Structures are given as structure tokens and as C-alpha cells.
Image 1 (cartoon, one colour):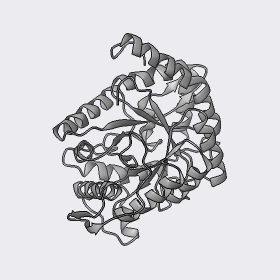
Image 2 (cartoon, rainbow, N blue to C red):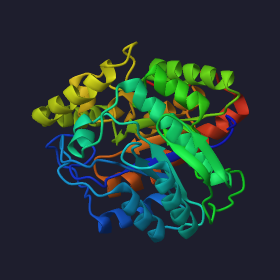
Image 3 (tube, rainbow, N blue to C red):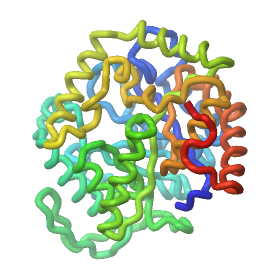
Image 4 (tube, rainbow, N blue to C red):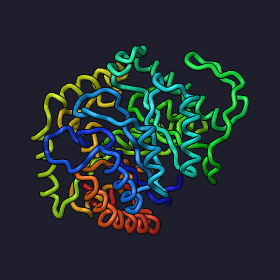
Length: 374
């Protein structure tokens, strides 16, 4: 994707209860299907191109109730016209051929708007509670790589063959195939993670690499690392970055909202989440796993969205977004406190500034650091 390509924007679908922050602060956000249909239509009319449905099977860490992301996304696809729905799915709980078949049907129903986010897994209790084995960290990523290779193969090749340690496919064809979308070889495959295993995986097989929230240096380091692995494999990968948006008339007002969110955090839920995810992150050999260096305040937003720093006035947020584009971001995956109001505000007040700054960037080629993003 060229640097001149406009940034794409996605939002986290609130298909689990509790909102996007684990806090008792008011969140005018609902996890119901009716609310999410209204939100999806508003989002696509506000400039959002993608929406990512979360995957959570067990009541945990503030998410007492949760809708299945695949079924929920299919419903939202039928309620929208342009929005692409990214379904989060776990290898080990899905078989890749079953997800591939579901994806083809969803892709045809939506005329080419289905995508997947393959989640290697961090929540051990979901696997063991369902009687499935919990693999060690790097083994989960080895399984994910096989899963993605099978998914892609079944979407693009008849009489597909695959022999791996986790999956074996024998002379198998899926018919019909996904929609033929110009410029798209198959439904897009997203993948997250922070560890070296996750970065190498993206550099071999994924279309998109999702980063948890990061400051400029942390994001730049990830992009450089993944690009290096991709170059070794003659592979192209695009980059998505998580961020939580708090936009107010002044920076002081926005920072006061952040302070209130953290002050009203559900400490027990955040601490339980911290222990669970940091066990997963610290199980990597080099300590680079997701959430390995996250502080309590970071984890109140469970994808480190505060760390991206999209907090302030619309102008400040837009300039910071452009600085991330200069560092390699192709997509921003955003969360909000009050979804309907905040998504509409983003489309009306922040996105136009982003597009103006992108036009300036195309004309001037401003280097990193120009624009006084804080």
C-alpha cells in the first residue's frame, strides 16, 4: 500500500458487554444487536471502512456477556452496504476449513466484505474450560500459521493439499469460491500479536498485522521488525494500530476524562486481566509478548488503546494520527467511550482534518516529527 493511499479506519464492535474500558465510568454503549446495527450504519456513513467483532467465549474481566463474532458480523453485513466486517477466530476452537466455508458464504452474502482476524489466543481458561489443549506460546503461533495457510489455500486453490503438524487437508475443494473483488486475492486475513513469533508469522503469511496501542517509538520498532521479516519472505504486509479516542474541546478536558476512566477502574477485573495476559506475554522467550510491559492504567483499556495517545482536541488527534501514518500505519482500529456520539463526532470533526493533513503530506512529503504531534 502506497504512503499516498488514504488511511483506513476501523472500530471495535461492542459485541461484548461492559464497553471498551474496564471502568465504572458511564459508557453510553450497548452490546445488543439493535444498537450495533445502528452503530454500523452510522460508522460506514462517518468514514469507517472496517469493523472488528471481538471474540470472547467466557464471562471474564468486565465482559459478563458476549455475542459470537461470526454470527454477529454476518448480521451486521446484512445491515450495511459498504462496511467490511472482520471476524475474530481462534485456531483450536475453529477448524480452518469450517471457517473458510462460513467465510465464503458471508462473503457472497455481503458482496465481498468479509474478513478474518486470526487470534492465537491468550485466555487459557477458554481452551481448558472447553476441553481443548492449551499450547505453549510459540506452538500457538505455529498452529496459527498452518491455520492461515489452509484458509488461504482453500480460498484460492481447487484440490488443495496440506500436510502439517496440526492440520491435514487431502485433495479438497470448496465451492463456490469467495467473491472476485478487484485487487483482492481472497478475503483479507488480519493477525495480531507482539512477540517475535507473531512478527515472523505476519512476515510470512498475513495480509495485515495488528498492533496493540503503542507510542511512536514502540510502533516504529514493530513496523521495522515485521517489514524485515516480510522482506526475507518476499511478502507484503500492511499495518493496523489500536487506539482509544478521547476528543474534547481542550486537551485538559480530554485528559480529565482519561483520569476519571482510570480512577474509576474496576480494579479486580483489571488485575485479573493483567495476570492472565501478562502470563501469556511473559511466556515468550524474549519477553516481547502482548501486554508484557503494560501498566495497570494501560490495561483499563484492554488493547492498550490509551498508549497510542489519541487524546486531546480534534486537531491534536488528527495530527497524531498522521504521525502514525508516517511511521507505517495503514489503518487505525479505534475504540470509544460513547460509540454513537463519538463515532459521529470523529467522522464530522477529526476525519476531515486527517484528510486535509494527508493532502498536505502528499504535496510536501513532511518528514517524521513535523506537525508538533504530542
